[in-house]
Length: 236
Image (cartoon, rainbow, N blue to C red):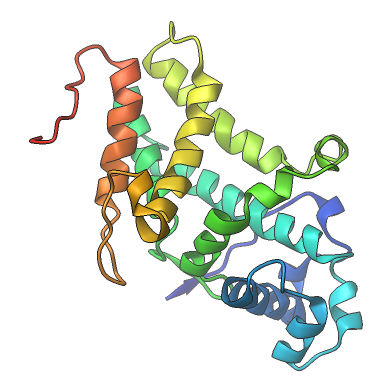
């Protein structure tokens, strides 16, 4: 079942918001699938145009270049994750429970629990894992930061950092811990699937259970924030 939702993103990311038109949504939908299939380096607007039966010029009416399309997709994903954390913690007062819910959302956003018609979150998450660093590990990062391109990621990080501070007001590094949790979620899923010797998490089968990643993040976060949190052992 699909839901109707439009996530507002920085207008400088696009020339025309693709969420507003059928062609724009098609560009997003098939752009995600094609980047996942061939990788961002091999991806071009010409290949995307062939995929959707349109022209390069029509895609350029929405995005100036493929880098901005990638940024748009990443910002969409980060904002969708923040929306899910907000929604699921709305009536929760216990900060420990809120952080558990936030960690679950960080991991679970990669699975398509709620379907949005033109976005496959499973596939988009694979792009986030493989390509996200290319969005901000660039020579233009400072200028793009001035344009506000990373406000969605910063807002997501602040949301998690605020929960961390609520749980432990004396903890000195809430923003660093929040960004580490976000990066760990992606990295350890990626490592488990492709570079298993770099993690202790195991994910088996095409419909793998992400509970081990969630447990890793909880143990890491609560081990730092809560003195009474039991330290994980091989037998636990």
